[in-house]
Length: 199
Image 1: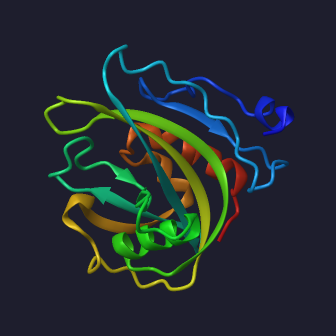
Image 2: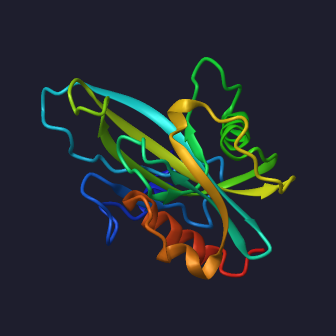
């Protein structure tokens, strides 16, 4: 990767981010095909096994409203908190990154989307189970603006381990006031900075 692309990305914990969460914006001048660097997190403690996974989150806007989903009460990590559709890559099943995010959106909210370029990278660490035992998972994630091709939200394609409850089209000006998953807050701020009049 060109040194200029790496040096233009801010690193370290984002203001207001939860512990263990690191965030980096992808500059508008960096093409989507050029990956921005993600800083080393420094967690978990040495000797604890870590599994690396990749996730994508879809920012879908229609009529000045952002499509958001709420974690169900059964979610082991963030019950009742809000986020945007998306999830982890199926290494053996997803054909490419566009196929990955299309699948996640279809499963979680029943929409067809046209994936756009990534605008933010971040990462978090979490235990590989609700009891916190065993290895930890380090997830590197990309946020993408996705144009909706359909607008009728449906939960029919969800799988149980999504742990999702309701979905809602939230006015852009109200999204930050929701009880969000902490790692999503800096991502949402960057989205609103880049797309203040999207819709």
